[in-house]
Length: 254
Image (tube, rainbow, N blue to C red; front, top):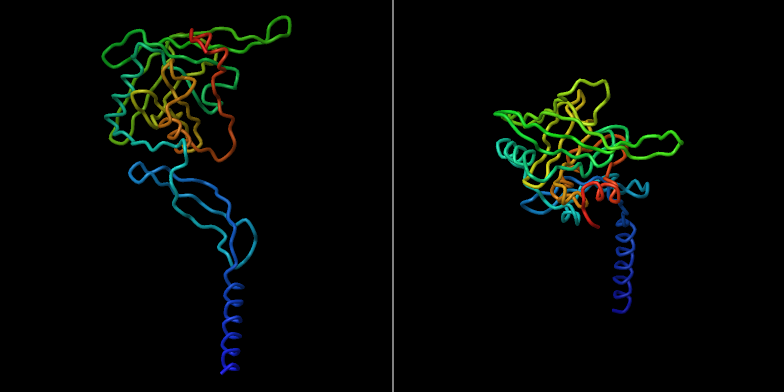
């Protein structure tokens, strides 16, 4: 009886060792995350194998809770989005470029870009664009110089999308930070995300416009839409307003 017990013990030990050897733990690193689903508050995440073990899958996709700070957002219909844009561009509070790809509005020398409503016609909104331009002074130092120009906005709505066209109404050879047609990626009553209409729309730069009083912390639904819908295949610096300069320009206290 004792011998039979020893044989069964040996079989169990061998089986356990074989099982442990065949179930090696695979270590993965998290990569690209998908959009946050507002209904389930879940998002997909791509996992890439950290080691080169051939018994583990090289990549896999799992579902997890939305990343903290990535608030789920509901994409408005084109009609609702057009209403949001029209409401924002004619609001009493100036709109401020709160975050953008650096090539959205120039070469990195433009700061504190604002759009202020002046009047409107049946289809057009007449705005005043103001900004601070970094320039080299005669003594070799650099300083920010205030600039401005008038522009006309027109909001166009189609079955699937909404666009905003900014037309410069003055004759000038100087390059302006805002002009042309922009696709409305996302809009709410507090912010809107615009993408430049270029030949390669997937590589086009984006910018978030917010009200002046919220430029320091753009609403999370707009930042989520920016990061999820405005991905670039290569690194592009992200513009954020200089707090000390723009806060003073806008007459805001710290």
